[in-house]
Amino acid sequence: MVSTETQAEIEEYLGRVPSWIDALPESAADHSWAIVRDLQLGETELERREKALVALGAAAAIQCPYCIRFHREEAKIDGVTDDELSEAIGVASGVRYFSTVLHGAEVDLEAFESETQEIADHVRDQQAAAPSDD
Image (spheres, helix red, strand yellow):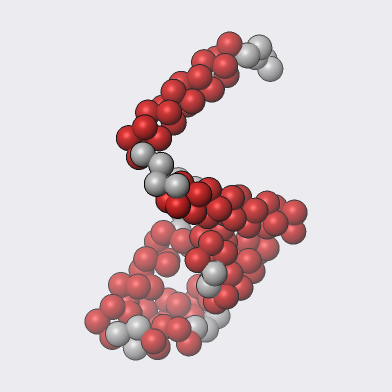
């Protein structure tokens, strides 16, 4: 159970205290809310819609129906379209797919890191050489 102060804060943000808060050990409840408040709901380097899309992609990848439901609704509140939701899930599925390929094939991590750096350098060079839209 969260403290009385935290309970009031959650109710102000969300309109109610979600039932999953009760599943947290008392020693972690206030802290857990602070993580949601400060990182997910607070103003950070990422816009709220970006964070909602990242969260939805992660939720889809770990196949969590609770998180999928919450973050899908969160994204919609922040103006994310159905097409953007589908794309975020598609990107997450691609990451999971290729992670399975890389792990299953036991691709050498050091070689992969080196290749990735070469690719990133090439793309940056291509972008620098591209005509400007100015």
